[in-house]
Length: 219
Image (cartoon, rainbow, N blue to C red; front, side, top):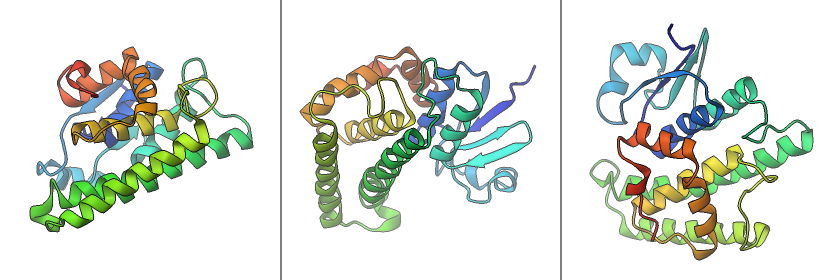
């Protein structure tokens, strides 16, 4: 029987997010594994599904969706029961999750890490700009300082006392800086290690990157 959930994309932190959540929720899914800039996102077949030509992309029955945060929120709402992933029910809890998700997506991912990627890894396309990269790194660490101010040095989750979508987003951003051989601030080591120790994270990492999560060196 074909799984109802089909997911396109792997090998990136953004595609890791829905894969990890699907593993946490124990939802049967089919992964169409290919990375960005491999040519596969630009095929006529894929473009007919997702004209953005980006990954991840999800189909659940007749429902289609792109963007990693939108996909994870949808999957949690549809398949989550709150047993192992925090499922916000009140307006206040939903707003708090949105607050953290928006902060991580806009300040850490898009404004900082992807700027580094564009002008470091993809400089042949977007231009070599070492000053921009240095500024983006400094801004990233400044925003991590905001997390420390809000949550303190000793915390294991961003929202409530259970894994949440914001935790998944923050962990994948920390994975990203590890891949760039940047330092994970000391106050986030325990958080990051706790997330990476989760069996669903490890399964998702292997499915996403094709290697064991033990390959991720955090120091």
